Figure 1 (cartoon, one colour):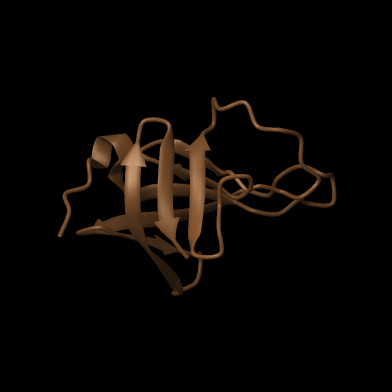
Figure 2 (tube, one colour):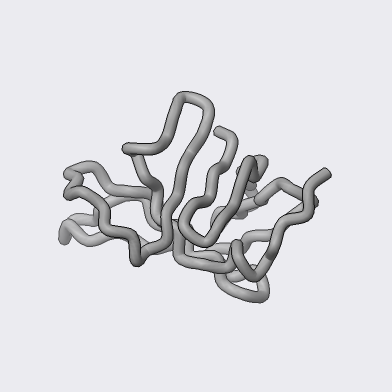
Length: 104
């Protein structure tokens, strides 16, 4: 069981397709210089207190649609809740100030 630094996790993370694999999703901080993409990138804005702003698709105005949700950490598993009662669980494989790696 690993110990995850919650303060390090509380950040606005954006998926890096370029670094992701079939088994891992790689996220970089919002300040990272991404290459342009026509496909929307998943955004996980993990706020203190368990609030989450999630985006992964464009709306009719070509802007990212944002969804308010919640998150929590259970040992090394990041649990993301949607506005229903569904949840997605992703094991945190590694975390650093410039990179978050989640198991798909």
